[in-house]
Structures are given as C-alpha cells and as structure tokens.
Image (cartoon, rainbow, N blue to C red; front, top):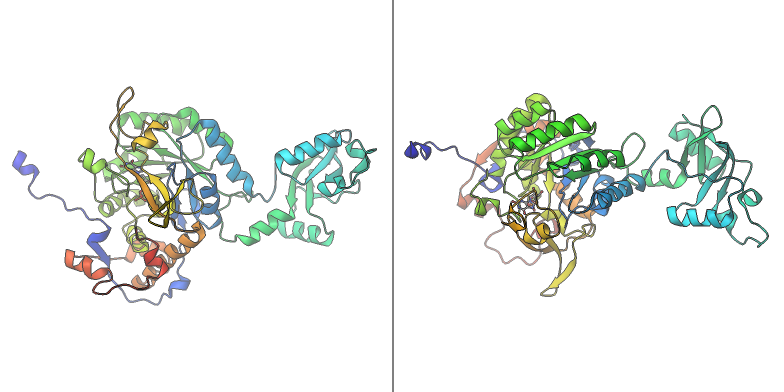
Length: 485
Ligand code: XMP
C-alpha cells in the first residue's frame, strides 16, 4: 500500500518546466486583445490583479490598478474601519455622476461652507432649500469677500445651470463647455438635486480610457476578508466594494466552506474564493456559488508553505486542474503566485487562468505601501509574506500558522524587492510581453490563448538556454532587468 503511493505518480509542472510552442499566426502583438474576466460579472481590461498583501495593495495600488485596466484587492491586515475607508477612497477617486451630493442651505454661514469644502476636498456646493436647487456656491465665490458677507445666499450664484438626472455624458459635456462651468447639478422632475457631474471627472475619464469602472464611472475595487469574517464582508459590501476575495491559505476546508455559504447568503457582490489547487476543491467551492477561484498553494516568492508543511501543487498544473472544472461552469480562475516574468503570465493564461495575481512584481512599485530602503546603493521596497512573523504579529493570523493562542508557525518570509517605478510602467512591460506571446501562439484574444496555446516540456538545459547565456551583459532591456533581484 505504501509502495503504491509512490508508483505512477502524477507529474506536476510549473512555469520553468515548459514553453509555449509557436504556432501559425496572423496576429500582430499590438492588435492582441487582453480583456478578461476577474470574476463572473467583473470584466477587466487587462489580466492582472494586485495581491491583498500589506506590502502590496492599499488604496493607492487599487486606484492605479483600476486606472490602467486591472483591479486591486485591498488587504485585510487592518481594522474593518480602515479597510472601509480605503475602499471608499478608491470609489470616490473618480465618479461620473456623484450621487451623494453635499449641499448647503441659503442660510448656511460661509465659515461652515469653507469648512465643508476643506474637509471634503470639494470646490463647489449646490444650494438647496426644501431639497430644491436654488443656487450654487464655489470656491471662487469665496475669494476676496468683504467681511459683511456672512451667509451663502449673499454670495451664491442664483442662476444655476443644471440638467435632468438622465442627461447623457456627451450632452453634459456640451453644457459644461458652452457655459464655461465646472459643475453641473442634476435634478429630478421635482427639482430635487439628485446628482452632480463635474468637468474634472470628465477630464480624468478621458485621461484613463482603459480604466475598469462601474456604471457610475467609479473605479472598481476588491477587498480581502478572512474566511470567518462575515461582518467584514457585509461592511465591505456596504462601503461599495465590488468584490470580496475570501483570503485563506486552504479554502478546501469544510469549516471555511460552511462559512462561505453564510457569506454567499449575506452579500450580493462578487465573491472570489481561494486558495485552492485541485479540481475537487473547485467543484466544492463552485457548488457554494462563488464567482471566481484563486489558485495557488505555495508558489509565491515569499512562501514557505511547501517547505514548512510539505504541501503544495506546482502552479501551472494547479491552474490547469482548476481551470478544467471552472471553465465548465463559466467561473474565472485567478492564478496567484510565482509569476516572475511576463512569459510566466502568458503560460498561466494558456494553462486556463483568466487573470494572474501579483505580489512580488508590484511590491517594488511607487504605489505599494511597503517602506523604501537602500541596499548597496540600490533602492528597494520591503515585501513580506502574509504568513511571515512580521505580518502575523501585526494582526493577520487566520491565514497561516495559528497553532495555539499567541503561538505561530510562520509560512512566509520578509525581505525586499528592487524599486520598480510606477505601476503604469510595470504593467506596460508585462502586457507588452503577454501580447508578444499571443503573437507567437497566434491568439488574438485570451480565450484563443487558453484554447490554442500548446506546451512543450523542457529540460534543465532547455531552461538554461532560455535565459541569456554566454555573454557578459552590459545592457539589460527594462523588461528583463525589471524583474531581476
Ligand atoms: P508572488 O510570487 O507574486 O506571490 O510574490 C504572491 C502570493 O503569495 C501568497 N502568499 C503567501 N503564501 N506564505 C505563503 O505560503 C505567505 O506568507 C504568503 N503571503 C502571500 C499569496 O497568495 C500572494 O498573492
């Protein structure tokens, strides 16, 4: 019986074990389309997701990821309130139709108006009386005022330009332009202020045409929750998160699954659950009604799970096992961990993933929350596993390693990765590599890459041949150098 266990073992592959075979192609890389699904209902413009780690994804990362077409998952190693505030910051960063409009009354003292403008960082407020629009007051109205002016009605513009609540964006743009105004209040048929469109938001929208936004023009954002933290999940939904990522090292655990059932019954937003590595785990989670699966047991650059627990599944095989089941149910797969080069992303997508989740490659960017440090004259940013002692001691302890009260077995390390500039530039290089791969394979979109991409197994010699060799490199292009440690 024991001998049998070791005979005819399944082989598992990861990124460096294989290459994609070039195929007949009429696809020019620049024409390749990289749109994909993050979850059942969330479409993203590029297949990259930032990992919910406390040295990777807070609101700045989530804003950058959504602006350039991906999505960020805000980590959970903080209080529910802090996480809610971060979600709200992302949601409020851009908006086409502001729905909860701050208004003031004609009798509001000007001091109060100044306070609101400063506190909420807004430059103009509609003035309402009995909910009806009677004027507008802007920062400009408050400049160079005599001391005799005390309340809103003495300085507001009474002749307000406004539009119907259902005005379309192009028409709103015309009205703003023709009247040389910055803010357009929207009113319902009873004259009540129900929204606001600003020219600043329209300009921002034009600046980031590839951004992933909701129907109100707000950036999409996901947030992580612990497997048993129902309350956090409910609060994140209330705060406006578009998806929750149920964040556990082992989602194929029956207690986690019981809890997931409760979450499914309690929130309507998208639920992405993980991590898993097998088809059976995929079946079980899909039957609970999750909208996306996160795959990866131990491939991450900071992970020690495979060494400490002896458990894992080579990442490329894990992706394909899960994707085989998930694709039959229309559930997207997020390949999480172990990505070091853009070529790894192409392989993950060809193995059935709909998107990849990155920790290490994004931890070194300007937008990550990690602290900067200089080592041997080179700039680095700190990066650590969420199962590292540093992360666990800051609070998160239900993902890895809690063996008894205040006793932990770490499953991750702490360190630093080279500073890599802005998220925008890293994504540009990564997506450039993905599109190049699609050109070689002959895939004009990611669905074709998943369907047509074929692998060949390589040897150690093949891997050596794949990297630059037999040369003293004097100039590394950014897309190779970027990812060297
Ligand atoms: P990369 O390779 O992108 O991987 O740095 C990021 C992913 O690694 C996972 N993760 C961990 N896994 N111990 C682990 O075994 C840890 O401490 C740990 N922290 C993060 C996680 O899935 C992340 O997205």
